Image 1 (tube, rainbow, N blue to C red):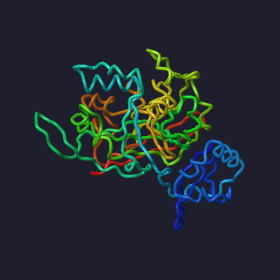
Image 2: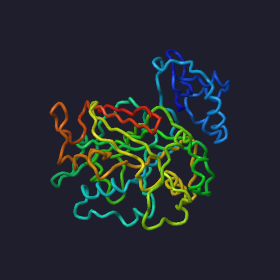
Image 3: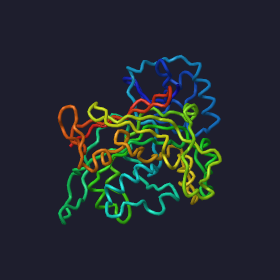
Image 4: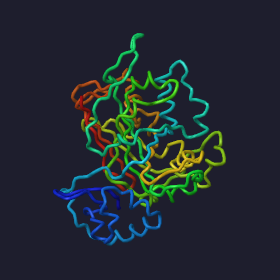
Length: 360
């Protein structure tokens, strides 16, 4: 398989490399093109779908010339805009029952469109970056206070990276998804649940989500995922015409969530209610344009089965039913020092991992 990222060697500037089976290919040297002698994938991605295909063909015959053990990995893209969706029926249902037990039904619009919100692109960080515990306003026992979150959570997602932009005023049809989206990464949506509970009504997430998003360092091109396409889910009611797919598909991607090296859950992506193509179509339906480096999260990947849920909120029922770790600790939400790691595989494709350690 091939994946693309940005790396540096000791004493050298960051540049684009391709991860192949036996190492890393220095693309600027192998393909003699300065577009790869940059500290981001954006200029490469901006050249469009045909160029992506040409590079993939060329890389297939390039020997690895860099030892992976010698590289430092960097944020692979300059993130232009960040959107995060809420597209797992299981997650939306689980979360509603926990957070709104008095009115646990889904909002009427949830089955009509991919619900999402804009995040903060400047706080997207590469795997391995520390995650400082955020502060915000919380309401407890009728009092509003400001301080560090006591309910720090992580949401297991995939992120989709836009490579080729679109024109403002011209929505991107679902059928044109592959012409615009370059590839996918693991996406960790860090969430301060107590802050979110107070600030998210009536408008939505803000400080509870904007402090950090972690992505894996290697972007897996869509072409590497063709072999793991599976039929998309049935939807009721039928989506409006601009969201209908003639060939609805999802991806058989298996993820694993670990806390301090202990396996906590195994979410699977294939059951997501809204597809990435529908998310992009909805994102641009009002004429909004996308740019190289735009990143959108799939939304939490989850299940009704505790062993495959994608957040601690769901796994521990908001901390009320904690997991007992191997060291005897009761895990409700994340403590300072905890290390979260998510891996993902899709057949023979390995996304590597996205990790972050919580610091006080």
